Image (cartoon, rainbow, N blue to C red; front, side, top):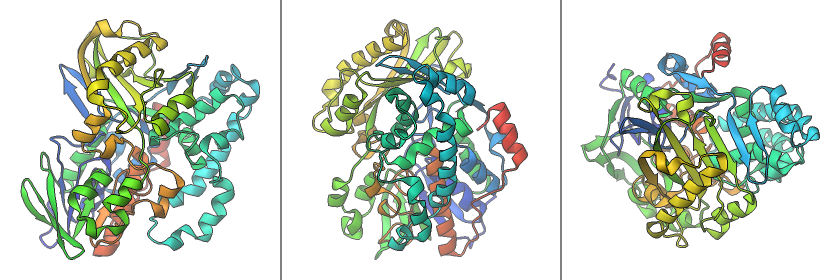
Length: 520
């Protein structure tokens, strides 16, 4: 359904999850939306790639907290669960501790209490209190996550001040968990999720205890076909609403009249805009597309002083046969977890005993591999790009180390069963995927880079420029990125005088059905 000729023109740079969500909302509001994507596929890091009959998620491998995306689909008159199929996992993942012991994390609270009791009977008695307290925290903080922070006074609001006793910003995430759990392995089970933000639980703000709560409250889900299937569904819906998505169409220049963006020049030509939405990696897009003098608060010099998240070393492996005894998600936490984190965040060197994550998705979704074969997705958190690590020299050695580490979860024959392999290092994230420093989780989420102090959804200092994605408020992680698109779309609607509906009603019946059959 094409937009009327006099519709407001919105250009979106990047077809990642935030850009696609904004395209859906703005196209449904009647805007003439053009999405320009550098790659020949949609989804950004939330995409899948295929090779030799295998299909892999490039980045995120699971779906968490469906409420935001359900609401976006409902706002444009669609049902997320009719567009995608998702399976709720139980166990959600298998945690293996280098220091000894394991937890098969389950959303069944009674079973999870028994898992924790194997480490500490006292800690098992604290699980329900932890979940109850974080339910209150999540409900209290939801309005903050859903609101733009455009002025200093937004940080000083009485509403936010009242939340301080609940949020306890003076505590780290690990410090917050010490209020509930004594055994350090149990605390790790409830704090390793800070890695979704690319941060250590010993530095991450206590607010993010809500991450593990969301897993147990709403589930961890696998989209059939991979997480990229969700991005593809969003692109289909956006186009059906009238948006144009142009692939393999890199934006080369933003066109300014003074401080106002009036369009862009891409490979396909000039695209005029009443509003420009940047969904590309924040730091890279600023440095390449916005002249330094137009962004004094985020100049090259100031970006260089900011803290960025860790990166990831990746192996995407097509395997002969299957590992049916291996969980869908397995996380191995290094024996000396603190030292591993210090290597990543402070020393910027490669650990000899790194933590790692393995997705064995074919135990749930055989469609991802040819018959008789399976996929393994192997991720090791590592330092972002730093002069201490030369990946051209280190990659072969680190690959061997990564494969040896897999024996710690019982996979001692992987090397001989590999029939397809792709490796991605921080240098590849930087150079091929256009991610500043290869920091796959964008700007770090320390207190000095959150809320008003993060790049704002209506980008400061420029006219008609807006941000979505992990580099703006509220931050990284798929549900939060989708929320950034709702905030930004609402602001654009206000500025252009267009009624944008960003929050659709999701019926209790549908939500109940989703919980029962395992759809996110």
